[in-house]
Image (cartoon, rainbow over the protein chains, first blue to last red):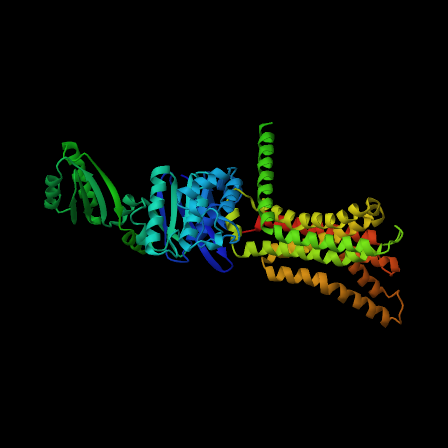
Length: 303
Length: 265
């Protein structure tokens, strides 16, 4: 596990931000830290890198206590804060170079991350002249300095217009796919992470209601899931599945099927598909996504 | 042996990070430092040219000029410290502290920029014009005076620093700094005058003596200059400067301890 929280409590005066939060994040996932505003997402992320001190409980990131070994933890973590504040009078190049230097990298690293997020034409612009979308890109760029093993992104799409929002989400998915980084994305807009997450942590009023792989959570809370099934005979398989009545939707593609399975039928579906795999009708199958919204509602209700 | 080598490596990279962040803050405040040094150097250069010189045993007229130009020095110090308070308040500090920069390294970088650099800039602004005109004047100017001046500046800097760290308020840091600089000395001296007057003009009033001693600790340089006019106090200028220096060190140590164990952003 890269991140482990065990019974973590954190208060700001009389306000309890986290109340015995327990969750873990395994290596290689793109995890959504999901919950409404004020549920404790930002506090969790800040505790993970030692910017805040926990009141109770145990936190381990890469096996280290982030409050005690903060520098060591942060040298392996890239962070984008929610509504970050940058020094506005500094040029983009200067700021990125400075942050790279703190991580023992040179100016070429600043250039690399700027190019990666499409900021290279703005290197000589002052930070204050950047639009919100480009400021968010700057935030992502600085979080990528030194190719961190873990990326913590706090509301990365906040205050962005829909197209910039899509661009940022696409960029996050690409980073996970191409660089193999473990990513934790916090958001209060639950459906927007639907397409990119394969792991979720549901948090509400400082309590973690549930966490785990989406496929496991879908099974646990019996919510509708989407599977992609590779098959040499897509049409034949589609009609079999519809006949068995364990799916609510089938999309036939070239050599594959996209299948929507209701929560109550997951076990039947997986049993059926496994037997077809043995017979050679199914080459492979993969859980793609589950309705995060449904999962969240059921997880919070069940808690 | 291995742990020693590891610790050495850690402290080397720690120094490198402090140096990098200090240089970044310096770059941002470069203009302020330039203005400060040019202004102080100009006033001192002109003062040397136009003021008569006295014997080394008494504070020179230049010392009184220094008393006024040191205002620029202390204001610069308070300005930089209040920038740190702003950095902490508006969450810009989050950006730097999310890097492998530790809380203590961050505070050290600001400490160097706010206390050490203005002191060095000011001292060189005072000494350079003198040295250029006549290096012998440096000896008659008196290093002792400069020592008192630096300790007084350090007191202001450490007071502003602990205020900034604890309150994270730029306004309050500025207010306390300026109150110490512009209001408190007059209030204290007024108090001394009133107490002396109320005891029939006698300079031996214990309350006046105590108040003067407080003044001496808070403003060792001003007290040093005034001691030439034989004001009565319970302590000597040397004792005052030692106590003042100790309090400054205590303030700074307390600030750094707070940053290390309690500072959250």
